Length: 192
Image: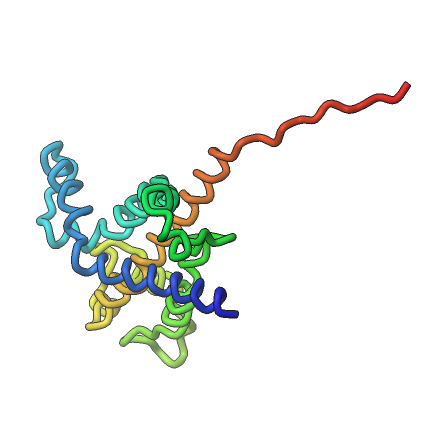
C-alpha cells in the first residue's frame, strides 16, 4: 500500500513540476523556435503572440524529446557510485512517467467538458468547435467569446502539461520498446 501511495505521489509531483516549468520556463522552448522562425521568415508574429499560438505543439515536442533521454539510468549510476543510497533509489516495476499524465488528463477532461462560452445560448447545443479552438487552437482561432481570464490558466496549467506528459510517456514507451533486448531463442531438444 505504501508503494502505491509513493508511486501516486511521484506521478503528482511530475505533474506539478511540469506545470510550474511550463509557466516559468516556457521561453526556453519557445524562444529558440521563434528565433529560427523569424530568421527564415516563417512567421512575422511577435514573441508573445508566437508563445501563445505555438506553445502547445512546441511543449509536446519538448516532452517527446525529454522522454527519449534515459533518466532511469541515473538511478543505476547513483547506486554504482554510492551503494549506500541503493535503498533510496529502488526501481519501480512500472515507471511513474507511464501514468503521470493521468491526473492532469482527468483534470483537463473535467474542465474541457464543463467549460461554457460566455456567449452560449440556452437554445444552442454545446459548441464543440469553439471548445476545441479554446483549448487547442492558435491565438488567431480565438474569438472574444473564447478569451476570458481563465484561458491562459487552462492553456498553461492543463492543456500544455497534459500534452507534455502524454508525449513524454509515449517517448519513454517507444524508447523502452526499441531498446528491449530480444529474448534468447532456446534450441529445441529433440529426443531420439
